[in-house]
Length: 439
Image (cartoon, rainbow, N blue to C red):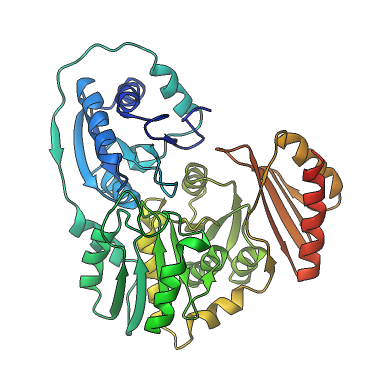
């Protein structure tokens, strides 16, 4: 399987992605984009520094100058591109994938993702032989203060909050330390803030329950108002309420959507095809315009730019903001939640309860050889529902809905089901599992 996926490059280091390949990708990137200056950043993975150095060499040997952000989060990388008007960027990261993986995200001006067919063109350009050109310049830059001032525009903490924050030994620890020094109403317990690419305390994906054990324990021990967990590169964030329960990302989307629509009447709010119907209900209740999207940051950002969408939420814990250059940011989302909680006397769990009123399966994963046939069979078994086909299949009925989509990286089908009752949820789940088992 190619390391070039729908919206990034990702593979196991060093078998699938290594310094030699990174150098060639950098040369192909310049051949495709014709960029004269490229900004680069890297996450905390053990292989990211050497890959970043190989990319830097490939870029400079192709005649491009390089601005190096060093160890940083992906949202910081996006900010740098926009704030300084860079026209191209490469972020070395495998996001939330296990420690043995690494990869790259590519951007053009305004941090617009380079993905899909464009990535395939870059992949093909790797086969060419390139002559060494006049060596491009190299410089390092630090935008910490500018970035934090930008983040702080999104929320104010008006009363004392006690929080536990887990940086997961990723690339957000340093910037979080700076941020909390500026937030006088936040008493923060800091977990795993030191970058360590071996991720010794837990895996880099906070959406998995096993990676939230330490955070949940500390929230309960400290009697905190909430807990916050970031993935390795800081673009994904997960919240824990004061009872140490994980807050579903679709609830966070609904909470933030309501806040934004109170401030922006008639605004457009985006959510991905896997999201709870509570999101659409909240948007409509507050006179907003709901926009459903396929999964994936490059597709979401493109849709948001095209339609002028205020805010978008993804079930994976990514949240996108028009006023953040249509990019996703874990820090900004955390600041907005701090703002909301500090302006109410309600506990986080009481707020969550308002929105989390349906029964949800979470994402179910099935290894399937012929995924297209499975989707066709499932579609035929549910003939009367409202169908949405922008990303696999979603079928809505009055008392339940489900989505089925192919994974972009594995031979898997990803299934989400939601129903008005536990019994209906179980009935639909069994029916879908029975169809998949026959394929």
